[in-house]
Image (tube, rainbow, N blue to C red; front, side):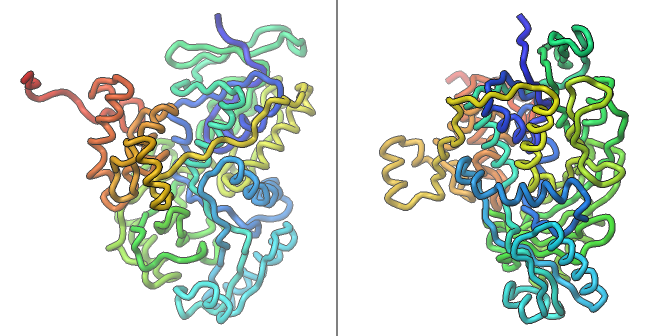
Length: 489
C-alpha cells in the first residue's frame, strides 16, 4: 500500500535536509526525496563551504536576515551533529581608495544587518590578520563571525539526524508526475507524487527544495511560474601542503554580479580557489576549462601571491540556482494548496540553511499544520570516529577493538577500512558517496591508490557485481565488462 506522509520534502541538499531535520522534532510523518543515488549530490556538493559574515547583501533582502540568523546557529548545530566547522573569520581585501569606498558600503551593510564584530581595517591591520596577503593591500574589512564548513558532511549529518528521528529517506526518487486528490480546502486533500521509475508516495504538504530543478517541480504542482538561472562556478583545490594556505577566508572587493573569486582555507586543511560566476542554460554542465583556470589563478594570486598551479590536486564546477531578483524565494504557494517554495537558494544558502528550516517550519504552522513536539526527539547524533583525528593511544585501542581500523585504505587522508565499511552501512554505496563521507580519495593522489580497494570493499559489503557499482549513480559505471575469462584456479 502506498505510504501517506504529513510532509514530503523534495530535494536532499542542505536546505531540504535542514528542513526535514527541523520538522523531525515534531510528531509528523516525513519523507525526504532525492533524485540522485545519495544526498548532497546536487548543488550542495560543489559548495565552497564558506559560512558568510552577513555584509554582502542589502538589509531589505530575506537572504540577509536568514544569513545572519543561520550564521549564529552553527555553533549549536556543530555540537549536536559533529561536522567539521571552524569560525576562522573573513577578510575583504582592497587595493585602492575606490575599492575602499565599496568596503565602506559593505561595512555599513554589515552593521545594518547585525553582523557581529565586523571591523574596518587599514593595511597594517589586514596584514596582521593575514600575513600572506599581497603587500599592495591598503585596507579592507574583517568579519570574525565568518567561517568554513565541509558542506557534504554537514548535509550527511543533517540527514542522519532526520532519519534517526523518523524521517524516511528515498534516494533515486526523481519526481516525474503529480496527482491531486480530495476536495480543495478539505482535510483529505493530498498529493500523489510519482517517481520516474514507477514508485509513488502520498503527502498532505510538499516542500519544494529541488535546487536547480525547483522551477520544474513548481510546474508539476501547477504552482508559480518562475525560472531558475544556473550560474556556474569553477573551483580549484590545492594540496594541504600548499604554501598559499591562509588562516582566514580571503575575498576580493565584490562586483554587482559576484562576490568574486576567493582563497579559502578548507576546514580539512587544503586550499580552494574560485569560484567563477558564469551564466549558463545547461543544468548539467559541470566542465572546467583552461580559460577559466587562468582567470581564477590570476585573481587568487592578486590576493595571495604564493598561490601556485603546481599545488593543484583537482578542479570541479558547481551550479548555483539563482532567480531573476537575486533573493531567496521562500513562501507558501498562492496557486497550489499546501505547497511551499524554497527556491533560488544560492549563496549564502549554506550559511542560511538552519534559519531557512526555522522559517519554513513557521510557514507550515501559519498554514495550519499542527506541530506537536515529539518528546522522544534526539537532537544529537553519535560522532563518527575518524582514524586520522585519533591520538596514538586512541588508534591503538580502536585497532584492538576492530582490526579493520589497522587497514589504511586511503594513505593521503589516512582513512581506514573500518570507516569505509561504516559509510557503506550508512547507505553510501557509490564511490563518490564513500569519498564525501570518509574523505577517502580526496587527497593528493585523488583516489589513484585507494579506489580499487574501495570497490573491493563495496562489492564485499553490498554483494553488487563489479559492473553495477557506480561513481555517482545513474550510468556512471566504473567497470564496463570483463575483457577476458576469469581464472578459476
